[in-house]
Image (cartoon, rainbow, N blue to C red):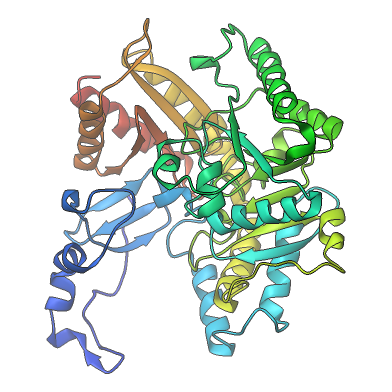
Length: 455
């Protein structure tokens, strides 16, 4: 187990306030949260907050003194781990130099961040529009596609999540779209998911072929001349970490070119190491027109996201005003965090580490769990991006009930393991910096948690 060294909270003076003489400021963190903080995606009365006081690498320090191995990376965004010294230093240096400046000005941190981000894109990408997160990255990717093509419709998957802003949530396929579906011009289709095939397929090749035929039929029925773009996650994350067949995206790219439709790849969750590649699309051998990103670009140390624009789309706006902008687009502190994170990830071979952890530990050891746990229906993923799909019965593939899924999380917490579940799936998504030994230790804890939950 990793031992954290940190300064106890409550020492010294902060903003003129002697925190050492006011223990309530720390002791009541959860009470203050319950009283004053409005949280996302849940009924407020069902809140049971846990206070986190520190972290290091793949570990979190809870207020009660427990050290917890994090198999979630929070919102699957802390790729570089907690409190990476180079990123902390990068933010501090930028804060000392200049804390904020508007997007109209040139700023060295912003320029360097953009150059490092597009360095990871396919050839023909040279410009970045910076946003504050993944949702507004997808929002502006959609805006650019509509303006460039003069068309309205955006096609996306039913099994997807693209963010919680207007167009992004309408592009999303899951339940969160339904109470928020006010944006126009969104059409959904089915993407490959062999374990629960919509196409009666029995092999990945069949699933891929039939999914592509289905997509082309949707395009034909909707009218190609009405469709601006197809928006797809490289690997659908929140929807189930569903790894597409190897040739699926090549097929989508061929279809989009056939009908003159743009292709937007959502790398918000998968980008910058999550799948063991700098961008997950690198493993699929195709080049889209637009790439959205966020989370892993600086691991959320300061909120940041963006849109990588291919040269034809970027140059279209040389003489056409792009009617979009954000006060904090390219915020210097966020840019300093991107620069430091990108440099550290390259210097320390963190993306290679993510690949090795998936290939050598998570893949084989999670798959081995299915031999002793009959409630595991399927294990899938790559890098540090895995799903363990839980079922009540392997023959029927009926999803495991929510109460048992919550019990698995609770049993993991008792064992010092932070687990995340989505519906009937355990998502195993530790930071990219997790070591082979830590990953192996985590799977052993998951094994015990599943046993304790009767799975």
